[in-house]
Amino acid sequence: MSIDTPSLPNSWAIGRKRVGLELRQFFRDRESAVFNFALPVLLLIVFGSVFGGQDLGNTDVSFAQYFVAGMIASGILYTSFQNLAISIPIEREDGTLKRLRGTPMPKSSYFIGKVGTVVVAYVAQIIVLIAVGRIFYDLQIPSTATAWFTFAWLSVLGLISCTLLGIAYSVVPRQGKGASAVVAPVVLVLQFISGVFFIFSDLPTWMQNLASVFPLKWLTQGMRSVFLPESAAALEVSGSFQLPLVALILTAWCVAGAIGAVVFFRWTPRGSN
Image (cartoon, rainbow, N blue to C red):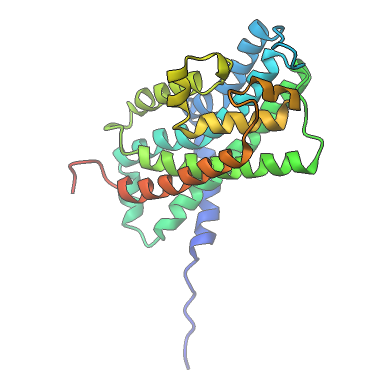
């Protein structure tokens, strides 16, 4: 008589359980909650209150509405790139990654847990940002299937690229405690040069060219096409939202991020065995 041995849970099953664990850790960590969730909402309220009444030419768009679209794009950067680039070094330094690597758990389950956390946090953050934008700044909610489809592929490409880049960049902080000091300034600079805090076409040309190298500039441009009227295209440098080019560049960053994540991610601190 043969005895059937229970099969081990597969990667997806373990990964789904890790999503719940990661989410509990994420919202219990005050630093993660502030940097990745509460901060965008606070910035939206502050900047919207100070500059919200300024109209942008003949576009029927206020600065607050322009800013909301940029902060929605920034929400992708906060919940994916910044979250992972800060949390992974902390887990690497305290030995969590080394212990996980030594267990029978498939390595892919760890990343499934991280990706699941990113998606849930992004959805929650976007709901709050859109609600604040709509209630206080008369943000235009997409009313066509085309606009929602654009929002969907922008979110997917943005989350994939920024998640992979966050995993790759997580090797840069040498210590977990100092990770936020290494990551947060990068995010802030990208926001300044990508048309989040200022009208992108008003920035110096060299700054526009620099921003065009990174995905946030294209995410903000794409999100403006979703949440602002067609007249707002006049505010873009090219006079249009260039959605095909946005899709192409974000896809390229997905590929680059995947390569970077595979090449640079480490389970143990640099210099250790």
